[in-house]
Image (cartoon, rainbow, N blue to C red; front, side):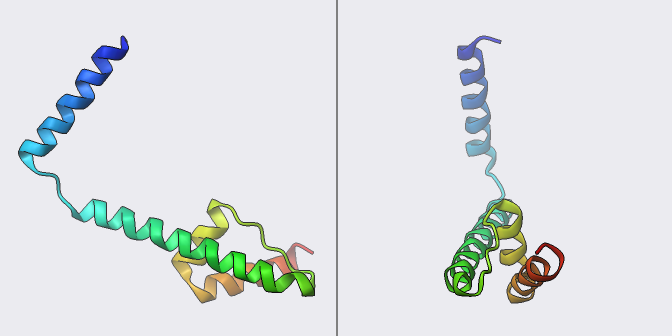
Length: 88
């Protein structure tokens, strides 16, 4: 498809959303999940900062950040235990 047709379709959909009004609940839900994933990445960063003296390094990626962010401290503890026990 031509690029200008795609742009016209996207602008048309945005115009329809403006007229009909989009529900804000999914936007809030996606935003809160994104914030939790960022918090999980920060928690993993601090664990890696303090864990280097003990030889502990948990990789920071979307999966581990999601686990640490959505599950909180129990998820972070599970990642540390998995790293220490299962994956030496």
